[in-house]
Length: 468
Image (tube, rainbow, N blue to C red; front, top):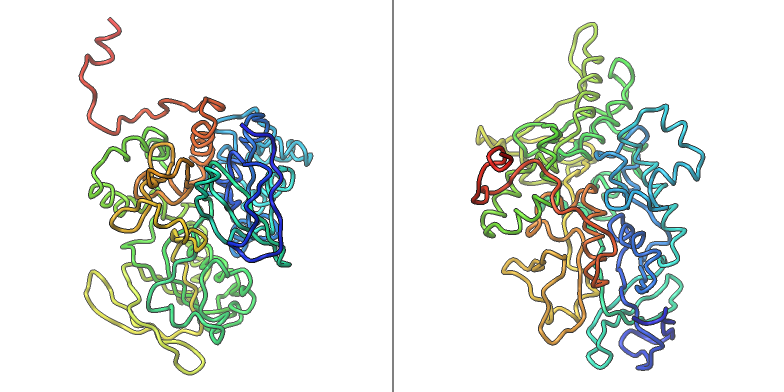
């Protein structure tokens, strides 16, 4: 493999760069969220692999719109960037605590689920110290350079400086984008800013929303629950001040996330391998049916909401809040200084209207097709729904003429199952990609970790009989 290359810089437009290059990176990651940051941390200290990670943002930031006080990760602290595959790494969360002289306070706090704000700070601490991570570098184009036998990535900084690098392997870690129901999309304009928004922007408009008469939150996942809880806490002790809070969701119930010890084995390499072997139609059905595995709400948050509502009923009366599961918003329009939402109750088959001052769509995130891949599109083999075809090493199927490798992180829910967006499998997936890219076992990954056998048992004697 090559020595660390010097990228070619110039000031011309994309596609007009010089053809001479000083070297080729072994691996370039696009996007520095937790998943590619995990890969960057595991790559650190691998001498034969020179890697670079690019991100358009000025610095690391993880869901800043929902970094609310008191919110915690839904996975244990061991699901940090490295520990699940390399607990000896200096980039572990425990070493972060040691470096910040917080190990004793953490020990005494007896926390298994850490503050979300601290997880963000931990990731930023890692990103700022890894020399392979480069921010203020927006990738604008990725194409296959057949003459160089490598991918060519053009990127630019906020002040207009442009550069181009070559890479034998590219890892897409651009994450997902906020998903908003079709009826609300026409209202996502500057004229409605701060009144109709996705929960990703909640923190920026939090104070103004707390002053409104009526706020409707759509979506039954963790983000929706946290927004509802935060708005309820803006009401005074008797629930008279602050906004009236309405919670709508398509799911049949405001349900807790599956968190039983055996149930969590769906977030293991064993289940990923099992899921990959299923027919496509079966995988599609399972992902829809398993929503409580990755779209439910923590029991603690649901309990906190219940406690807030209970407080409002002391002395009689009802809280200034309504919770409506099994409801889909089918239309939305502006009405005076507020909005009218047309809703349909799935089980009753009835329609009704809701008038509200503001709408927060906590409706999740979806994978997007990055614009910078446009010049590579004809070489990417997608399925009939336009999604990547991804193998067990997270390689995207490409045209046979491409000798380089394209990997993807968090865009393979359809091929790898419910663990795709979950932090629990982040380090394992990054290690899998690293081992594939290096062509050897750099980081040992477990072969089997689950007690559950997810498929039919293999032919052979029972364990008890085999032991005799």
